[in-house]
Image (cartoon, rainbow, N blue to C red; front, side, top):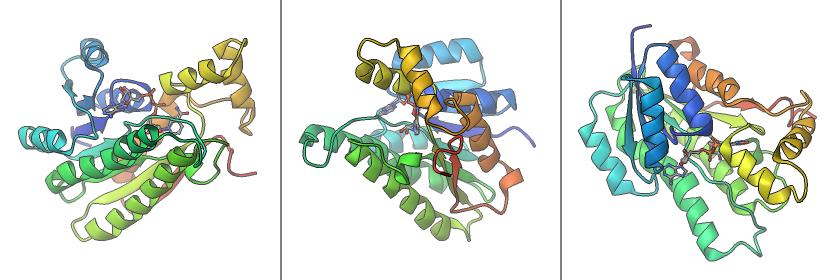
Amino acid sequence: MSSRTVVVTGGAAGIGRGAVERFVAAGDRVVALDRDAAALDALAAELGELVTGRVVDVADRAALAAIATETGPVDALVCAAGVQRYGTVVDTPDAVYDEVMAVNVGGVFFACQAFVPKLPRGGSVVVVASVQAYAAQKSVAAYSMGKGALLSLVRAMAVDHAEEGIRVNAVCPGSVDTPMLRTSAAQFGGDRSTDDVVAEWGRSHPLGRVATPGEVAEVIYFLSSPAASFMTGADVKVDGGLTAG
Ligand code: NAD
């Protein structure tokens, strides 16, 4: 496959960073969009000239549109930026609800609005949803709702853009060892070490552990590539069997 240009939101850390590394390993150019300027600088310094970092909040529709205008041809989009916030429908503060919807749902919608018009025939979008679109934990009402909305968006976009030859798919990870997961583990772990909490969460998956970002990135890479040429509107669980039981 010849070298492509891929836009990855949330590319500075976690699953998004894993995707950036996977595309770069294949010789692709990556435009990594993230609100964390320092992490973007570190990413570009580490991975070299194939990576361009752009600081943006994906909830900012106008800023995404401006970056899309300034960016040359794009072959694929990966939407990985997201936040994890906790609360039931009753005790979720308004500001938390607004943030989850703005970033996890609006951020994907706006990134697609900005970059899908640039995609060529054969182009592709991969959205990072979550198994929590299928099987909620306690106290993740807004997050679960948002991830479910992403699966509906993926199906709608798959239908809308099929005639243009653009494929749109989702990955639904179980627990993945990222800064997001470790922040949650530290928050809920009490006296236990973060490693112990992560290991315990891993044991809730039939494969007995959490995923690495690279394991999710491999599926993202596949879905974005011509190897997945007859896949569109799919949501692929990368969950170590969590939702199989
Ligand atoms: P992470 O927090 O480790 O990394 C997320 C990256 O996105 C960070 O670099 C962060 O700066 C960036 N980001 C967050 N909000 C942003 C915004 N408004 N604008 C621009 N950049 C922003 O998270 P992660 O664990 O890698 O999660 C990535 C995606 O995968 C999220 O959508 C998350 O919901 C989903 N997910 C994660 C897990 C998991 O266990 N880690 C499981 C299922 C789904």
